[in-house]
Length: 505
Picture 1 (cartoon, helix red, strand yellow):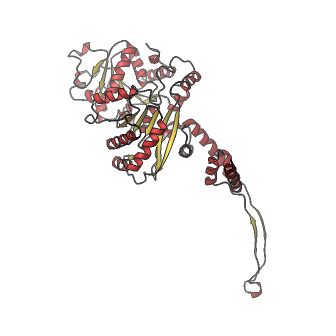
Picture 2: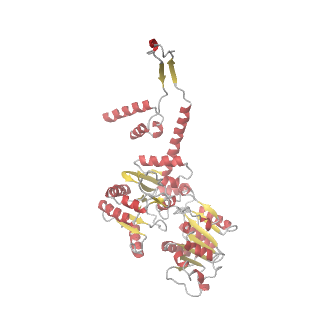
Picture 3: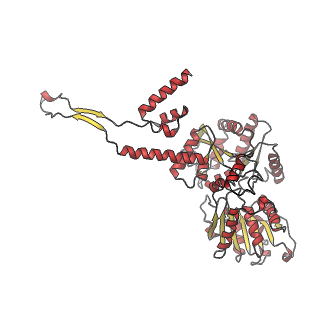
């Protein structure tokens, strides 16, 4: 077995947790981020399992990957049962492990070919789909079998409970932890502000943006160019995956990118008529080979797309779904093949990634007027241990900065600066103004006193620097932390002096 497929420490922990959970539960769920080897985990579980195993997924690409890894890890080729494929009439002679598409297995007459007790374990890849009627048909039929679900994004946008299938989460490994442990590459976020991009009028449908509204907005000529040019310029020579909101959007954006960099772009979609499987495979292979730099996708590549060379992911469509964004982000977080396996410590792995041809990945977001919408970004995916205010502020920092910064750095900076702001607020609550005043007793009915002076002098507490001043100081290289400590008067004087120094130089 190759080093790449030997179980890693966290995978061994995961396998132990799953086997322990099966002692008390029928349905067990595992959450592992993309690029950390979900298929490897259930292939090793298959190798350990004493009995027959059924592995199901909803895409042929996932089934092909599973069959390949199961063969290497178990030393036995699994049976492949999909579409019109058949494994013969005598099921007792079939391989111990069967991999299949759920579309095949849920058909009448297909799953009934097997006795209900035939499989001891049913594995569901991309288990967030497991509450679909097609999956439930199969899992309800094989009611004696244990069920293992693996997913990078177990939370569903439609809020349907995975508790219909799974009783417990046996193991969870966060993407931020996998990056820190050196199994995934660091994520740098770059946000491009587009003034003409107004999402405020886009409607909501089932907790997500209305597809047609989004398409109408994003396929206008101005947004297309304001997306295409930064994509080309920020990508440099990086292999780049671009996620679009519709087929029309993918076609239009691909055409405009071609104007800036001819011959570098192709688009694919999940529709088999528009993107036949053979054409899809050829196009992906050209992308792998470096013949194409930009691959645009609609309803495709969120799952089962394993191209470690991808070092830039472009969110060409906004989303309100943490799961969808996590899936897109995961397309670029894999380190290059052979970089981290075999290294003992997280420090060694992080150093190997830093010295590789892919030391980081960049996720490119486009910001406009979001209005009432809460648009998900990389700081939401990787900022689980941080509060909502910190994540929101980190996104603001990303939008203000022209450089692609590590998401972890943005979150730490936001937490630190918010801490100073809160401290300042608490300090100001205790400030009492130094006031001098005088009083006159006035009889309002006495005309001789009608013009008598009253009142006094007021010396207010010094006001803090405004957001505009803090931003302006930032353009001169002054850190936000330092600028936010200034008073309004100090900031004004500082800005004036820095302007004069810049003019002289």
